[in-house]
Image (cartoon, rainbow, N blue to C red):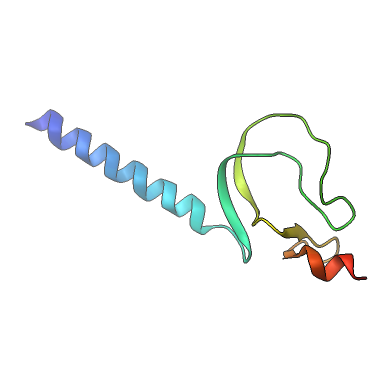
Length: 81
C-alpha cells in the first residue's frame, strides 16, 4: 500500500514540476523537451545548428527572436523591414 502511495505521489510531483517549467516561457514561446540549442532570429530565421536535444522555451512556429527586444515576434513583421 505504501508503495502505491509513493508511486502516485512521485507521478504527481513530476507533473507539477514539468508544468512549472513550461509556464516559465514568455509570450509567443512554447516549452520543448527536445528543442534546438540554436535560436531562430530575424537575421537568421533558419539557422544551421547541431542536432542536439535541449529542454527549453523556444519561439512558436512562425515566430523568431527579435535582435533588440529578445522576444518572440511574428516573422512576417521582420521580413517586411
